[in-house]
Length: 266
Image (tube, rainbow, N blue to C red; front, top):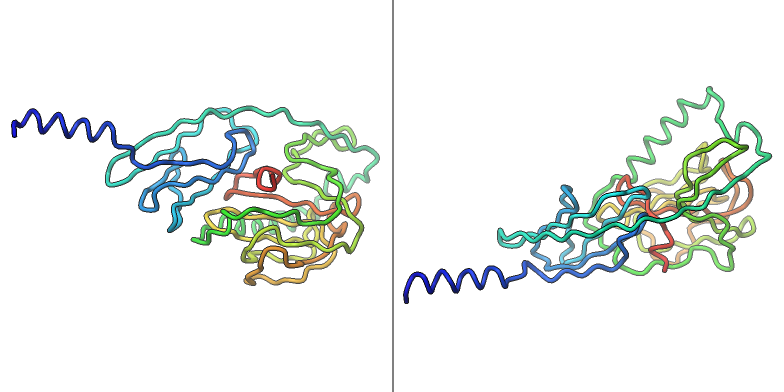
């Protein structure tokens, strides 16, 4: 066969060949949690970050609250790369004003700064766990029955007239002592009964850098290192830490990026 014909056939093959079909479950909007699916033998990068792909082709990532630039997903298989660029849509966030708080609820006293620093380090360590677990791909469930949502992700909080960090969680108001259920299968990576800001707090690893936090609880029924199945009662609603009333504050992370829990529950 003529060498030019062979080259032509090879070019047609290469340009018609897709590295792999890629599917996304989730929206490319600020704060959103996204699950991808591709060929299990593919390598995946989100921007420049290499991420895990499960044995059945699933991967997970998220979009930061204030991200302003596109997401670039690179899929590589057998040395052939394909780049997918997704435009990130902006969100409008609520402004939440809370007045009449004690000063210690707005600005912590200097004598607890070291404590807060130490606790934040423990939380950060639990959030950066990267395991091959693939629980993240299952559907999340609501953690508290018959609760009222009183706080949503992304809201800019103004406490006693002072702008503070945005709220990165989803607040479920319910009476103190109401059962709290695990939203997803996971491994407990942090179980603390008295953190300064969040009180009784749990963190679960769901694999691939996806973690969930449960905050301001009254009681905790699980311990660090324990495997917990979805729906298990892991504790009760409380108002521990810097809480203004009984509620559960749940959070969702992709490593150090804080995501909107509602995007996993919908």
